[in-house]
Image (tube, rainbow, N blue to C red; front, top):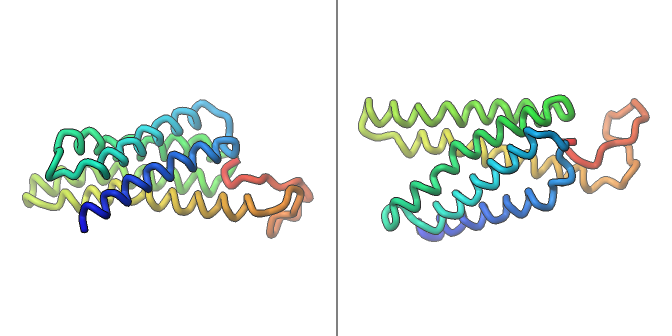
Length: 168
């Protein structure tokens, strides 16, 4: 059962990498975007490593892949900064989730020192924000990408041409 879940995790990492490649045109062309994409690509490669190398079988490779957690949360912060002025909602969500993810890392160390366990819970606090972000941004992209060019956005009374991307 655990092996199947880890393979799904690896597949998810590959899908996020594909999503980055296919949606790169929709992101603002700014330095934090490029760095954020780089961090997210490293994070997802780490996710693939974690998924293909269970902790109880190949600990060193699994731990190398576990660098996906700080890389992913750094990516959220950078992408939040890059999109804050264009798509405030996505930018704020990215920043908040990145901060929550970074706070989960020391929480794990504190739980392990104080109680001898709890690392798994803290790992989830550090990693789940990235999953939430991926789902929300992906859904926003799909919602906007399905509109024909020139269609008015819901509630858009400015008469401006809508943007075809949730993040640009």
